Length: 68
Image (cartoon, rainbow, N blue to C red; front, side, top):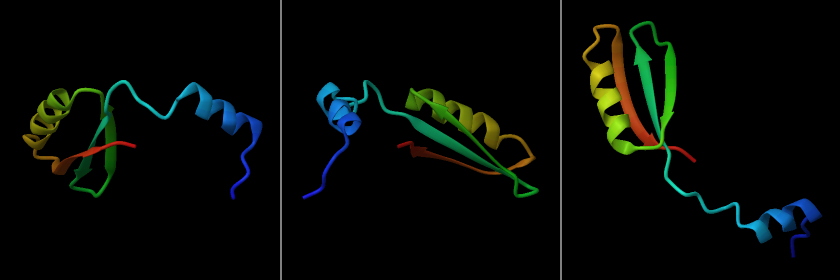
């Protein structure tokens, strides 16, 4: 059995494990292998941002993934 601290018990009682919305991380990889990331709440905005960035000749790769 795992013992929890009082703070961990309190967090479980409050129910902070449930999010109101999902987060999406857009990761950009530039031609010089520099990595940049940005987090969005709305997947549509994340997709439009990634599509806009992919048009740039400086961006090698752009991907969307769920953020934890």
